[in-house]
Image 1 (cartoon, helix red, strand yellow):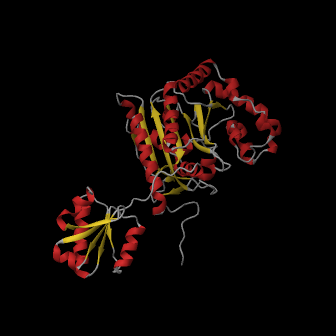
Image 2 (cartoon, rainbow, N blue to C red):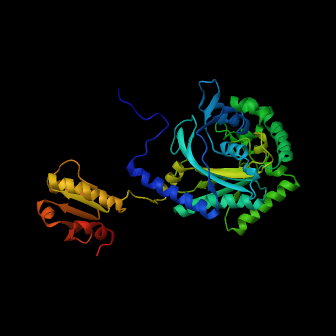
Image 3 (cartoon, rainbow, N blue to C red):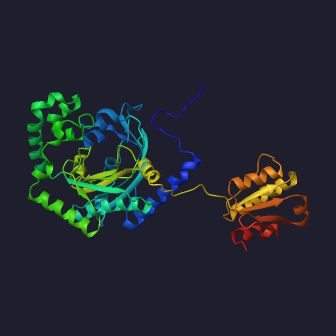
Length: 422
């Protein structure tokens, strides 16, 4: 039987992982500069954590979660997103009691959603996200957005667009909710079954519908920004002012809503405008989620965060012709010409690696010519040749592949010669 990778997943082969490692290193360094610390949560959680926080009217909860029962009959779900688990950990481990607030965290790891596979979207995918929990300052909203933009800029992306909106507070959302119901109700029969269910439960979700996005009523729907009360409008103004101070350009889109129920106030998306990137341009999305901590049993702890797909970041890099990482080339390759030489090669290989030198040797018993071709193919900087004469003289022939020079080097001095070539 021939086994294949499960639908919606992907193998990352050695030729691809160099870019992944470069992106991961860049992300960790950016988080260090912004003073965000890594948190790692389990890949599965209690199902109710997501139904309560993400929202039972969302596509994620209704259609996309991988949910199963364990042997104890408990309902568990592979995490479809990272914010709810991080806030759960924040509450469970009482991080709200730390003297320094807000608590600034980042995560990077696999998420799972059962959705139709398309370019840059998989059923198992890797997300990087940050969460700043414990402050309701507009300045921290701008900082989180700035961190996301910095990751893309440091990676070398230039064709980016930041779109922001305000979802307002509870009072704003209630007023807007009633306006949406009045707007859509007379023609709701023309919409998909999901939107018909959302009309009473959460009409804001209708604006995020992928099926009816081109319906004429979508374009004339009441804008949430028209219903902002004074405090919400002031908050949004201060977020924009902070972004202006940071020199981060943005567009305000009154129709931008995020697909998760816990968002309020600031919402944002970062998109690629590169030619040929594809129809789905969103790279990253996030927003403020005051009230999520209380929803899952914790104290009041306002927060804001974002999540970005590593797969889509790599797609954007490809679209702009940016390459971050290549496969590491070895410092040295040992060519052994006979069996006694191979034993010495094994010893020398261990010595080189102990000295921190990336080295390899032939394990197929090939002739010298084939071994030299292999060394050249993998880009070895030095080739170390050992044969009968070299064993007798106690010195190997070391060839500098870039310079095209070679010399006899005593075995005990090879590590130093490779580390500090003349």
